Length: 228
Image 1 (cartoon, rainbow, N blue to C red):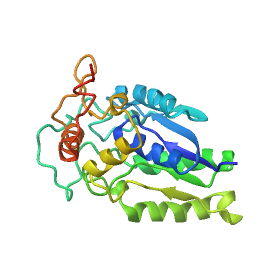
Image 2: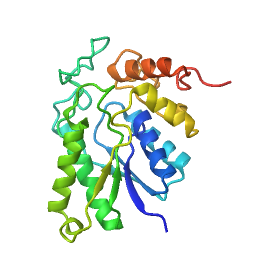
Image 3: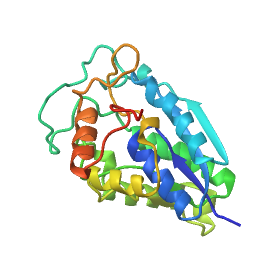
């Protein structure tokens, strides 16, 4: 019987790839997407499409409205999404959502305990990213320690492992990995500030990192240039 894994699935390129790695490695997938009041709701819509493509055991979508807290360009209409700005990994940008991965991993941890799962997959990346502190290896290690202390499973000797298969890969390496697994990246959504109709803006950090990754990988982004 395959081991169960909870996979945080945003609908973006990275989480899709991380989920595919979990499936390749023989896990039974339970995908979790959070409607946190993000302005790029197309990403949430894409998560359901991606989950169906992966043929997961169950896809759970929860409402957890972080826009009521605010503090991020992704959850507040009062803060502009930066466009065409230099990406400095030493500067935390306005698209950082306060404590997002801590909150999401906590929800995933709770569901994993209910499912009897000891594994969570998350598509965080410490190379080609926008300087978010909750994408670093030291954060993941700290969360695993928290899980050992905070859950019945951890106290009883069944520790939680948070898998980060993409954390040391460049965006191009992630894309090459996904393509080798047969993924259709045309199903995903990455843009932080979509145009009317849902098309990517092409100018936010996420769009630019995605475009550079496809270029470096020598591949064509099917989201921008769909197959005919």
